[in-house]
Image 1: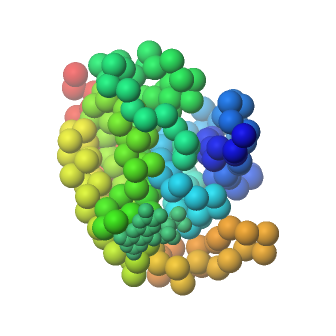
Image 2: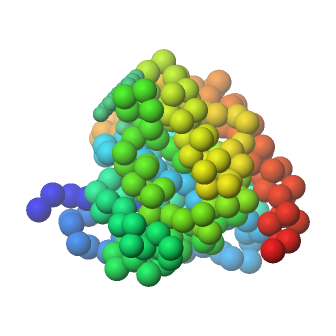
Length: 228
Ligand SMILES: Cc1cc2nc3c(=O)[nH]c(=O)nc-3n(C[C@H](O)[C@H](O)[C@H](O)COP(=O)(O)O)c2cc1C
């Protein structure tokens, strides 16, 4: 039995915003930090698309979650499942009916989100199959008219993954925010027990702009989303 890599965290304050946990196959996904629904006005769902654990992408996702917390009024949720089942088109019309509880959890988190952030490593000049699998479990109903922020790790801060994901966001009738966050290896420090921490001040600054943009765009879109 191999470990599956799952990430699903909700929090408002306190513990690290996003933690990755390896879990034996078949065990339920961990909801680590119950949220405080009163404090939060908006929810952002971070989808993590790395096949590795630990990964640069999860460190990037953690830094992004922290930036939303610093804005305030944002509830941060995150989901990453490297061994998620391949998408089954029978459930595309209503992904909430999927038999896999992990997929249903993903769909419920996406339904509840006001904005999403997609984080992918660069794989073969594009995004990873892992992020695509997560996205293929969603239908337009979960994402349309929401703001999507795009972030990636790989190469020399190459934009191949986020550029390709921008087209995917268009397919969902979502609106991708203008600022991408793309990182490379030396934007991170290695952690003693394994794993990475984003250390680049330049990238942290960019993430603050990225989160502020998504915040502003989400507020601007609120009336538009209420229309139907
Ligand atoms: C299947 C595969 C394809 C890759 N293709 C590219 C690529 O086209 N360009 C690149 O710069 N790096 C490529 N890489 C390297 C990844 O970007 C690199 O492993 C990165 O650290 C992954 O991020 P992570 O730590 O978040 O998993 C590839 C890696 C894999 C596994």
